Length: 367
Ligand SMILES: [Mg+2]
Image (cartoon, rainbow, N blue to C red; front, side):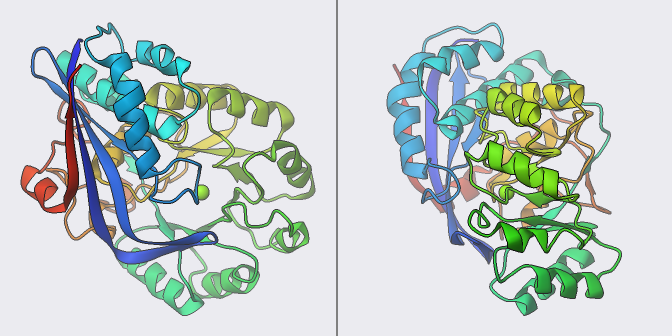
């Protein structure tokens, strides 16, 4: 593969329902679709999943755009690759910026699979016939949350992850459990309990499937101390930024589960390595979501076909978030599962008409 050209499309779409977390509210979602071309005019698609502001991790849409265009593109343009894994080492000279790197990595994996004429999920060793779907709900009030859960139930989801924080936790969870006694509930704290550990311990008897990222991103040691005190499994999200971070978390017993996000760990190559490490150590994994568009969603479905993804992830249907996505084929959830696409690569193409409608900036990069 020789990369000859990169198209960067910055797009913006309004979410059907605003998404509320302990750290902020997302109403309009911006993102970058990365389209990589090779010398045979084959293309691969990736997506930079950073948000517009740095509430989740340090990266933003603007920092990703700068890093992809000015730093990473010169490292990959007019260079040849035998395998997408080589890209990971090539980009190692750039510190951090995992979401920017992941967007290129995803596009090269898609291109590589297309050139081999294979679906990406088969190429990476996926074994699951269908992927377990789930939905994430963040709301301002318990009433709003119950309405959204009801909608998710009617759409066939059997598992919901709710966004919690101090004051929006024990009472909310009890009300949901009374209304839906047979539903699996997971709670995501997005680091909001850093100074409030005693509040977390109160949630330990509620039978939650897991509590995600209760403490800060860099608190692997504090998470280990907390996991010792709690029977509810702790799942780490923001803390797991690389294979190295996953190794440290496992060594310290900081968690019993890891939420793998391709963007947060710097690409599919690293995501697969983290999956394999977790399998060796009996750590459960599932695939997290970033309120992303159809390109990243299709990559998530491919990743989640790997054997270790035994818990429903944050992968839901396109129609849950968007009136119309930018990809040619929608992801559809049926009875709580998603069937991987049969086509080559990630199995979806861009819907050019829709892309034009929602695109706010387009740049083509040559060397
Ligand atoms: Mg999370």
